[in-house]
Amino acid sequence: MTYKFAKRIDVIPRSFVRDILKVTENEEIISFSGGLPNPISFPINEIKKSVDNVLDNDGAKSLQYSTTEGLYELREIIAERYKKYNLKVNPENIMITTGSQQCLDLIGKIFIDPGDVVLVENPTYLAAIQSFSVYDPVFKTAPLCDDGVDLEKLEEILEMYHPKLFYAISNFQNPIGISYSKEKREQLAKLLKNYDTVFVEDNPYGDIRFIGDDIPPIKYYYPKGILFGSFSKIVSPGMHIGWAVADSEIITHLTTVKQGTDLHTPIFTQMIVSDYLKNNIVDEHIAKIRTLYHDKCNLMIKMIKKYFPEGVKYTEPESGMFLWVTLTETLSSLDLFDIAIEKKVAFVPGQAFFANGGGENTMRLKYTNSSDKEIEKGIKSLAESIDELLN
Image 1 (cartoon, one colour):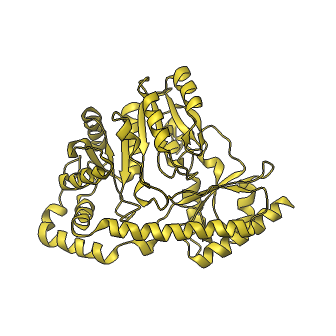
Image 2 (cartoon, one colour; image 1 turned 90 degrees about the vertical axis):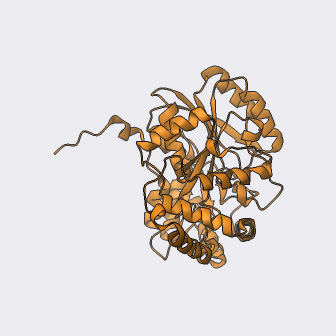
């Protein structure tokens, strides 16, 4: 039988990260690829207690169908947590999703028609490119500076193309690791007020800042914006609980399309996360994650400085999970990957994060989920692979 697949299948890029993860199932591989939190940060005992609490107190409810918008009690907790940024959010303006990844798909469903212009940072989150590609947009890209998007280039694109949607990661950007400064957030908000472009702010890493002071989300300065969040980095990615914060009209449409996608995010995991957040001092747990990741990041930077050849550039992020490495222009990270994997080291080649091509000499390194010994050994092997490619 010859299958007649939808045309959209041909335009969706495959995930480098997912494909690489198959390779790294080999325990001998040191993986700096997928964005995995470190499992030693998972609050296993506390989660176990919450599982028991949920089953003992609300067993039938936790195993039943539920509302699409999500557990109201959990939405109240999320709204309360935004108060530390002086950001007023009503639980009714929050929808629980199956990971923040689902937010991308649902936003695409309610906003993007074929041929619409979608603006993204350059480079940007690979899964955003994948999710939006399903709806056949035209991608435009805005370059990044050390403190956020290049506003001059952004304004040119807004003026020339009037994009339907602008997607950005405000804190510890994936893949580069930079963060928008307070001044850049204020300037961006002022600029966006002049256009009808829907602004979508992804913020999965905001709670784990380990250098500098916390800055309010861009939504604080631009209330019309849509804001994504996630518990994957501070509780557990396996729970797969994310959320979207948006105006009531947007939440209504998101609810409608989510009903046709998965009806609702599993209420059992929602109730477990809610119980965990109620009965534990979560900020103390987050502080431990910050210290852990700060140490891992510092060690990887130290090893890069020790082993990498001259001419290789790299970011030094204030938090997040990734470093961004730029090789000399003559080198290809895809060629480097072939050499490195033979030395049992994996990373994500950078071109995967460019919506319209580019980044052939770049790569993303994840520092969170490797032991100190693996970080030193892996970076040393990667340096040897770079030398081999150079020669």
